[in-house]
Length: 203
Image (cartoon, rainbow, N blue to C red):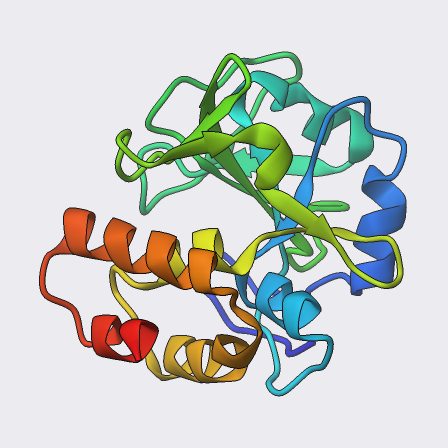
């Protein structure tokens, strides 16, 4: 992991195994997300990471407070700013980013992302037309760590892609199945319109 200087204090991401241990007792589904999820799908590392993301469904958000009991939790509310997330407070739609650290003098260690659901379906917070059964949203690494499937993670990365996102796409393309490529290309085209990744996904 890489220590990152951020506007609201430094990041020093918790190691993957530590995060998995903290959330292993959760009574709801959770998934490693972000670039680390892409690496788990491929089975190797190729770049450093300035943070580590855990995805929860909005309905399960308080599981983060239980898993990280005794930590500080700060919600991005409104986006671009941070404010304390009170114990037991249910964050409404529109707030989907939570920064967590063990104490006030510590760097940020874990970022929680909240996504939407309806019944047994996941619903993308970016485009409610993008849905899938919750039991297809994640996969499990060889070490038993749940992670967000790469076609969903790449959909989020595609909106404002950066060089590191291009690197993630290049690394994971060989392991994407044809159905994953088709779903991702369709979702990108529907939500974002013409996109430079479409040709690569359809090749």
